[in-house]
Image (cartoon, rainbow, N blue to C red; front, side, top):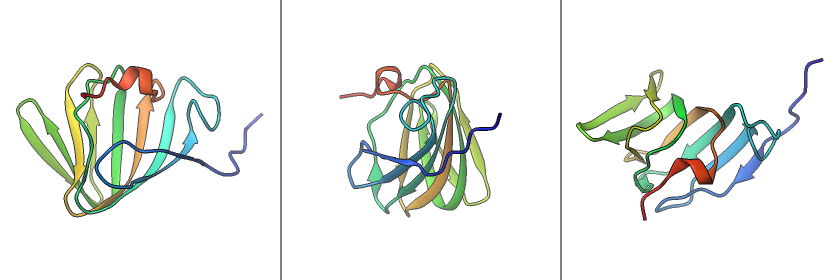
Length: 118
């Protein structure tokens, strides 16, 4: 039987400025450890510490620009584009112009498996 997710849960974000994270599916809102799906709204100038997560992260940018730094440089992901960050790979996310995006993590995001620096 399908499970209706009637509303997301607002999750506290890491980073330099307030960022809105609404988790629809994941460990907090739906008790789903296999996958997380969250709607992110990030202000201009936001950044978070680098991380080496134990999950793959698939991100679709809806508005603005998401910058993904990696060991060899960075990629700028614009509205209508997507990016895949693989588990075990160091990345750092920021939004120099602000952004709205959907993040999908397999398995689901958790503070214990993201391995943020600092």
